[in-house]
Each structure stands twice: as C-alpha cells, then as structure tokens.
Length: 91
Image 1 (cartoon, helix red, strand yellow):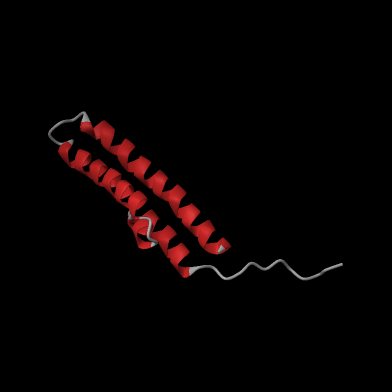
Image 2: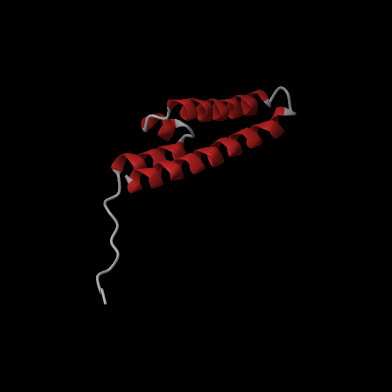
C-alpha cells in the first residue's frame, strides 16, 4: 500500500501568465504564449465590441451588439486560456 500523496509537477509560469493575461484583455495571453493566429482574432473581436459600444451612442442598435461581442471574446479567451494552462502543465 502506497501512502505517498499524489503530487503534480511544477506549474509553468508562462502558462499561468497566459491564462491571466487572457482574462485581463482577451487575446493578449494568447499572443504572449505564441498563439498569434488565435490571439489576433480574440483581440479583434474584443476591439470590435469596444468600437460597437462607443459607436452605440450614435447608432443605438449597436448597444445590443457590443455586449455579445465583448462576452464572446472573454468566453473564447477563457477557454483558450484554460487550454494554454493545461497544456503548459502537462508538458
């Protein structure tokens, strides 16, 4: 009978930084870890949401579009951030 506790390896600093940066600004963490294709799309989606929010003062319909883009960008960056974190810890 083995009484040793299960201990995982050390956490990758780049992986946790990528996750945190993705939560602060969608796409930034993806760019940080080298996923420029996904990172630029996430950043563009978030930028589009901010643009629609600011333009929504003139065209009120965009106020309904902006939250969808912003929430979509954050959810996508959360999913990719968790993938970065799990891949960084398994390596």
